[in-house]
Image 1 (cartoon, rainbow, N blue to C red):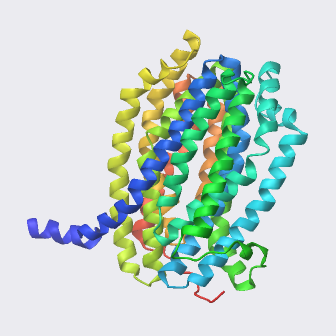
Image 2: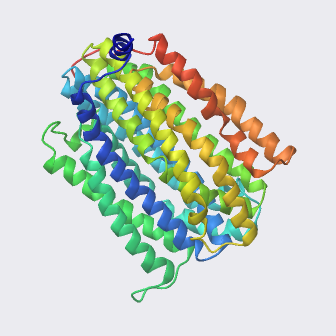
Length: 463
């Protein structure tokens, strides 16, 4: 019986310590980086939360527009990471550099368009989310400053994400450490008016974010151009037009990842619109729950990042059987991490709500949302590891795009609207309905992993 169980484990899972050691070299820096990033987000929310519910609602909703851009950049990074990991596994460094160039060219165009929108129509953007005049006015101020953030943050984000394809997770960690210190200090100075500066309130939070993103940009590019010694990247590549073969591979394996993550961003915006129509209290409570949610899901995203890189290397080198076993091993890890995250939300959720200066009714809503969030984060862990790491690293981006469209746009959003706006169910069920796609995708994608049909290798070429 023991031998039978052992053979089953050896067939589906990787037991060699070297595999887990390699995974940890990516997971640990990403965990620390994510802790810092979410710490910054939490401090932003706590500091702005000291100004009252109008301020916290305005910054939260204004950031939803930025979230669309952020998800777009994550999609571009994911597309680049899929290709770069496989080309790196195949030993084709020249094409890895061209992937970097292409991704940054796309970010330059998209970031400029978003920035122009925030300068010209900030009020119209805020009205998409809420009808409260006070919140719209404060949010518009926030967006005007945010306009300056898009390009530096987008470029540094793409750089720090795609460099993981080479196995280097340190850049993102260093950038996040520096960003944390700068953001915290700048928020303190500009939100509350310290060191002779005027108290800028919500607008000060945007200025603090801008300072942090500019420093991130400077650190990231200095590292890539002067310190990094594996890829030997040069900035002049941004001026080169990509070759048709690379564009075709980017369209085939990368574009579905961009579409998937853009859908995530748009759906996050629609979720905020639905909650915004339910009232200021709901928006404030959700912004608090969202921060806690992200803090407790940090290890999940780190496993997704590590699995995408390592499986991409295996697929690029032609080790398909190894990739399959890696996928099963990472999935099992995601189940354990999801359980731990759910327990953390239940244990820390209520104390975390006490950090904010909000009305008792808003506090009660936030506590209820924390309970539904505990269910959500468990399934989020599984589906994130599969969709953002394992299957994506194997090049199964088109299948994932279809799954995102089917379950988010056709199920979660309509159901959330019915439950929250039409039927007016309790907020516990509203949040479950808006995230029902996590539950469905967890089951669906495990079936896809078992089928073995998720491995698609990019064609190797010289730049």
